[in-house]
Amino acid sequence: MNLMDSISIIGTGYVGLVTGACLSEFGMKVICMDTDKLKIEALNRGEIPIYEPGLASLVAKNRSAGRLVFTSDPRKAVQRSGVIFIAVGTPIGEDGSADLKHVLSAAASIADRMDDYKVIVTKSTVPVGTSRMVKKIIQEALQRRELQLEFDIVSNPEFLREGSAIRDFMHPDRIVIGSENERAKNIIRDIYNVLYLIDTPFVFTSLETAELIKYASNGFLATKITFINEIANLCEAVGADVHDVAKAMGMDGRIGKYFLHPGPGFGGSCLPKDTKALVKIGLECNSPVSLVDSAIKANEFQKRRMVGKIERKIGDLKDKVIGVLGLAFKQGTDDMREAVSIPIILELIEKGSRVKTYDPAAMANANKYAFAGFNITYCEDEYEAADGADALVILTEWNQFRHLDLERIKSIMKGRFFFDFRNIYEPGELTTLGFIYEGVGR
Ligand code: NAD
Image (cartoon, rainbow, N blue to C red; front, side, top):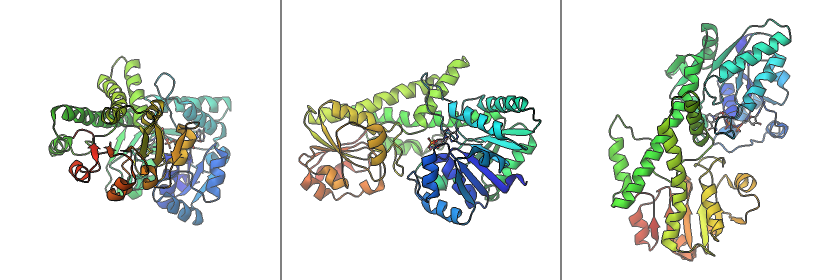
């Protein structure tokens, strides 16, 4: 078998499904495998279980071309492929470290079914040393099975962002490949040949370095956001405008303009868990990453600060109607994992407010995973959420919230309070229209 005749992806979530769809778009035959049978059945009916712009058409195109198939049968995924990516979840464990149970069980599942040389690639975000653990699991299983099969382990962390995942996968800033030998390195490099040909930078490293690059990147991004959030709070205290501060800071090439947008704190499926895992790795190695630890604490404070801002403006929250625009942790996704909307809305409810909300993609997940059992009104659109509200709160920067019919909003709201926690409006414009505006850091 030519190793790249077929590639398998174990775990068909945000990363696995996007990886599978994009690699099949590069012309490879891809098998996406997941233990969640309902998810696989849905995919085989042509349904896409997540919201990710452009993903549905890419999956449909490559399925009908016969390059992309879905299965819940691990044997099929392992035995028909030379290269197997592990893209299962690594959620936060009880002690803050990454919970590796899915990665280790995927490794065991591969080991029990291997029948030929394979390259096993960890794409999940995993602590330093995990790829070696995967190697050990496979070696031990092969010994038990009395098989002498060769295999290689590669670490290939993923940097895509939900909401722009396909673009990020197809035009990455870099591809990181951690490996132990030239053979494995070249096989994975060839998988990304399309990107190599368009001059994408490739970074070839050891397994440990590749694993740490991912955590160091996310730790830095979380720290950068938190830095500007704290500067935003300081701007409020001294009467400065954080947008001007961030813009001028970003003009300095050493600082860079990205990730300097203040807001209600970072959330999502990666930064919260990866920062905690990085701190844990540092503690375990007696090499503290105290800056990231501080960023985690400051971020918790930032989330709690938002309800305080609302309360300071409108007073007692009991029996107030709050219209909330946006639930997802960022625009362009239905992902509610660690979304800042969760603690903010729960605190509003706890303080006696009635919450009406609208999100273009995340309401089903919000209702199912974050707010099950809570009395929240899910609305048809932005205007229904604003109707009769004492205050409107923007929590996710969906593009469609940037051009609200503000006259209409004003006419249907009961109150005038407009909390723009993503700073998507100009304070002057809203004030002129008669709103009482509150952003972050201005
Ligand atoms: P996800 O929860 O969306 O998907 C994980 C999938 O793995 C699920 O469908 C689950 O059913 C499946 N699974 C679990 N155990 C399995 C097993 N043993 N065999 C087969 N399937 C199994 O997770 P995700 O957001 O795609 O993240 C996957 C990894 O990629 C994580 O380590 C994450 O930190 C990392 N990552 C995520 C993003 C992102 O934006 N979501 C970006 C970069 C890296």
